[in-house]
Length: 413
Ligand SMILES: [Zn+2]
Image (cartoon, rainbow, N blue to C red; front, side, top):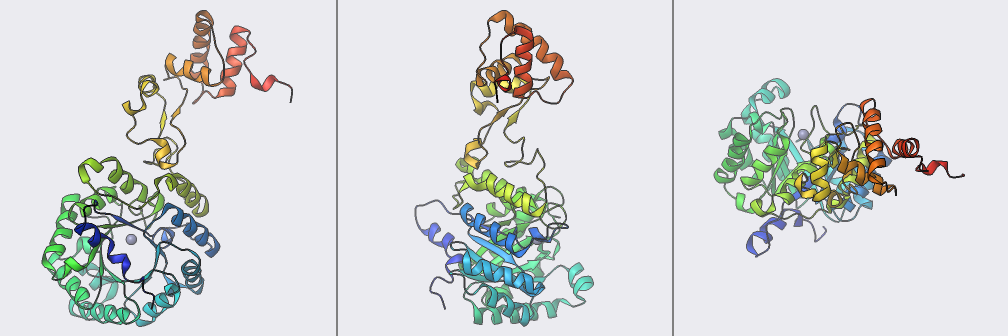
């Protein structure tokens, strides 16, 4: 067995004892939970391409798939485990021994690997999904974790639908999992139901009530059905979680998972308040976002935080004036920091003279004051009938109004 096994759960404990800020790890499940959303199914070769990009982003764990679900997914997970160096590689299993075996066979060639076992713990899931009772769920969980530990030093347990479970029973099941050898406990708000204060209380209660949690890494897995996945992930961190599960672009079942880029930038931007570090390479966020959008076909809305096309674009005159003087007036994140290039001044009918002059400078046009006024007037007429005025249109306006040869496209090809 590889000597590096088990290191996945130990980073935060090392950090606690030293003077370094504690590290929040990121567990990326784009290739498992993310891929489960309708229409996003990935070809194994595409999963491998994304896994290599997740390595560049330097996530701590890649959940590569659900090996028992299909032979193709087993092979994809195994290929990622064999080829992608750096992050630990995880696979998902139900409590069935055959699922656990499939994960182990798929991930064992990775330098660092773990088995992720899940079992429902809310009464609604136990009764209507599983047709079981609380006692059986408890026994099956303990048996599965103990079995997984015979194969692998790092075993993560997720009590599915923890967000709607009876809190005492949740603690009982987590206790059984920890006693059976689970060294990562991932608390999922599977249906995106919890409010941040409730989820914070849930994590804090498990951490306080379950014996042995000081030796266990706590992770959180939040869904976005009420738009609270990022807020709930941060609430989990506030209660002591030191790993966050999420997906690039927030894709995933239904309304999706917590977006890795949002949680990461909240930690970075508010680091003076939160005091936590991370291992990610944030300049890879936008390249990763684009790759995942392209290969899953799940387009990123323009107003998506951090990675959307408009996240660093300014269209109104008042904002443009501020940003041109000092971008910190309206930007809390530098576009370069997340790999988004530079912030963008978009010329629209809401733009001001400062923005127009800035753009004319950028395309190399200098105008005397009276010509500028004429260009400004004509610009507003054109802008009122179009969404955005691009450089080419602007050059035409300059050419028309002032008789200058402002259009670069007029030069001989
Ligand atoms: Zn999920």
